[in-house]
Length: 434
Image (tube, rainbow, N blue to C red; front, side, top):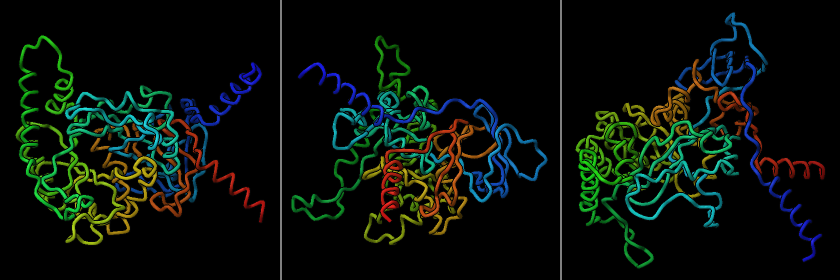
């Protein structure tokens, strides 16, 4: 290959990199901004018509009625006829850990081994992910980046979705450890000709005993005089001291009950059920032990033959009525790209009986409380981060949710992605043809 061809190839690669790169993160807020006239959905159930929101240096300084005699500050944005929402939060997400499912080199969501409490997802989080970039367009501005695999998958962290690197992105570092609870039942392997019916997992008790032994060994390690460090135990101890939350991924009634008993036996301070398809069957137990639930994707079918046909759609409403603190998560098939549909999961819960503002809380303040970040995000309240967006319509309805402004910690973030560029390109193409 000639020198000229090498130069031309280098130029082509340079410009292709520019075209494929994520947008530059927004600069820090330098002057106050006042937004008035819109309908503010606070996130705690409250709604303010004709609202006034003022924020400066990345923090909310005023949230109230525009009729209040409060001086507007800095740039004034007219949001009349529009809706203002706190940024949506996506818990239990692998965003930024996998870019292209079919390309192994872009996957960094799990590690080998069974017990990996010391594996920290945050150091693998890719702020340049084009998938993460596409979340902001639907108002999903934050997420809990969570590892997968093994019995104990590792440690998650909570980030915001507009950053140069993971250090800039962090909202709460190493917030919790994720445990995949053994399943007391299994289905027959239909591909081997076995009946696809539920059967008892004969290894279940041994698998639970293995977890108990592991936590007991951690307790012994913590009180002993150790000549060498045991990183897994040092990480795990956070769930005993209360510094970290133990997120138990479990769906069935027996598993949830056993996980709660496990919490009590091992003096675990904070536990959250992730998945919880049968959580309504033990709601009294959840309330008694003050255990929240992150419900798995509600756009799904019932798991059991005798479940109500609409159980996934009504489950959040049932649990909320029973007094359980509920949030929504979106794990499952194609979970990363589907995370942008998080607001529409909440919309479905509202369509099936849950009050609209309570449905909004499922992906804002409730989730912030569960993740332990409600002191800074999750609702539009004075003193919290100015992380919110303005939509032309109902943000929980895919037909009307059209965001024209979004702020993360007061920074005016770009609302473009590869998908919006394609939309604009082909819209213009067919508009010209017509």
